[in-house]
Length: 431
Image (cartoon, rainbow, N blue to C red; front, top):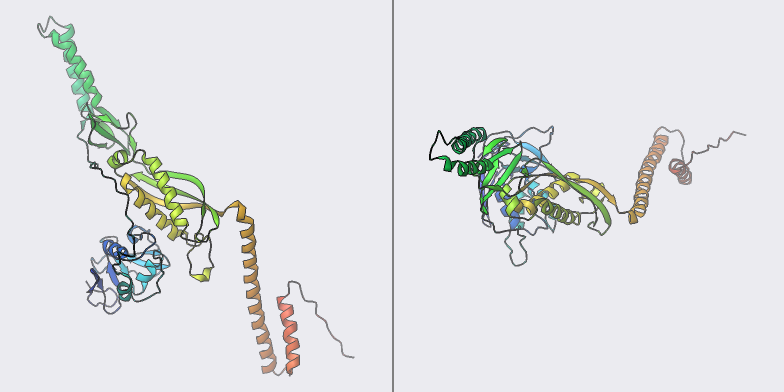
């Protein structure tokens, strides 16, 4: 691979069992998510990392970068204050020098300083199993995985069964034409009617999980008229499983943020069933399972951040970094419900406010902070204007002021400029 910026050949950097391709000139690293995941497993993290390939690309005026692995144009995604290049073709992720530490900063318990990519790997990607507990996903032992059920054209089988049924009907009531075979008429009609049970009708974005005497025999998908084993029965009886994208809204929850303030948070989760066998056999009710896991993930994420933080503090907050919080929330829910065969399309915060018992006090605090910031700006501007006025008077030789007169002038100007009321000028007439 060659660096798309300087043209230098990539080299492999070996560190603690990790093989990381990097450019010796620009120090940028090119990673796939499995390597990025392996790096995270060696760190002391407070939550799992987010796959940049799952983030939506953003339109920026920056010049696009060509992927060093496949030559395709890379997309740009914004996360945690960092613009990361990802390749939609080979799923490669390019980190410019210093971006690796900024990317991991949001996930680590001890927030690192911005540093060289290779130095960051040497410093933080150390195996330390004695001091770190590795979080494990929910594991449920299940041998069932979704696979397609055997089916035939329903219209063909319907006409075939109707023909067979008509034949047995003639045997029953037309003994003259079929002497000695009329005894087969009634049983044949019963078997034919039972065989009609194999006819199944599905609408678009519907599926049916089938079992025969309790054994899973496949999932029927695809809109149309199907015929399956007449002994096969749907686990959900006559109601098929919907594969459409659905929305979960658990309402508002009262949760304490990082500094203990009670806040009200509401989210919506857009999801779909991806593996019908896991959804049916791994959990009792996958909709309730999703609801409880979404509540748990929301509480875990909210407790990691304050409700609000000053813009120049560099601290992420629930109100100011909604895109990053939503990405982490989606990833956390997906990790919890993967065992149920569900796919989380999106997760967003729809309501965020202080709890009623502290809302008034926090509003007063915000107003006080706004007044202080405004006064600070006014004073800084007033001092600058006074300095400019004194310099102009001196440089243009309009009037020569001694120190005491300068002090009086400064006092009058500051009072005039910083006052909340209009100044009333006093004009002296000569006399």
